[in-house]
Length: 62
Image (cartoon, rainbow, N blue to C red):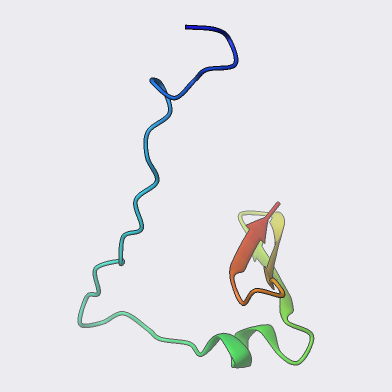
């Protein structure tokens, strides 16, 4: 196997649906992200950017 051939070591991506608990809060993404489609989240003294892509997916970056 060459260095560029990592198919044997890369697991396939699986799309899983998070299990919901009865007390889970639900927040509509439009109300969370606003018209701008992005929000800064402060967590543990760090700032994170949650944004919506043009394809409608959500990305969280530090």
